[in-house]
Image (cartoon, rainbow, N blue to C red; front, side, top):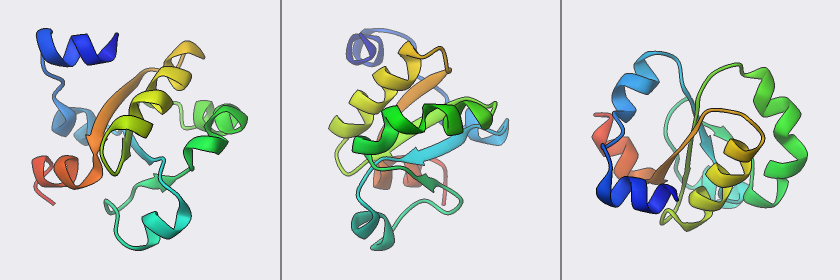
Length: 102
């Protein structure tokens, strides 16, 4: 569903979300994360997202998921959204980083 929203719906203003305190959640592996990431982002690999939902809920903020290409972040966004947390697929971390002006 989020793919269609991004293609045909209103574009998400990620910069405003981040400015308002949204958490950027990088769902790549720790090795990928350590090779480069958005400053201040948190790393929870995709295979640990489901078991980390309690921790993610404790952020008490919207979550923007990112990964290398946008595929894993789309899956993570879906898992997080279904659990009742406001979540957005930010796609590739490098693209989001650029759009945030970082």
